[in-house]
Image (cartoon, rainbow, N blue to C red; front, side, top):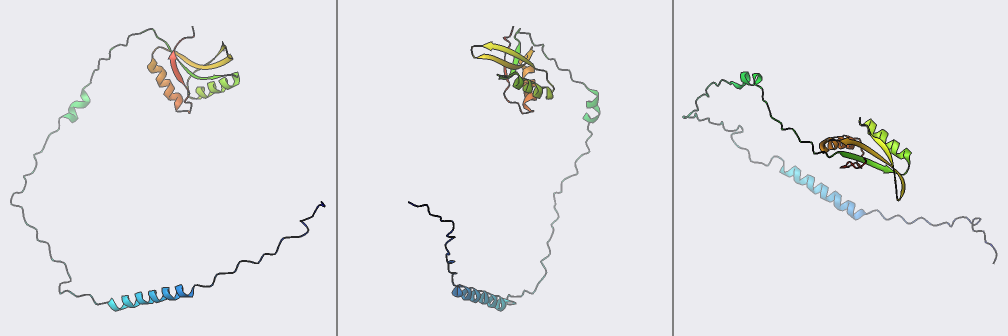
Length: 177
């Protein structure tokens, strides 16, 4: 079978689709409705009943027979007393339970990724460490913060890191000794 060249043929000349006829019936009906509405408004103009009193009736104010007495003048003492007082609160000392806490924010195969995470944490104003660990799956680089004496301190630092966009930090008991 011979190769046929369809490009040299050019495009087929298609006739444009015929334009729909102008909807004369809709135009005539719309104009008739508009004219009828305008005629209706013209006829009702000025046909409302006119009242004799065009001003509103005055409102009568009744005097209350049982008027309330004026409130007594009060002297506020707390304005002078409060600035001179102090409040002492007894906060019990928390016992040291001996548990130390660490926060791990990432574990990476490459030390470069761990250093990038450490730099992001440093921008939050916290100091972190990169610790390599060898396991059954090879060498991993862990980004950790700590040790913390109380879990509350670790939580406070985790919230500071979370504000920078790092949401992968976990708090665990210290087990790196």
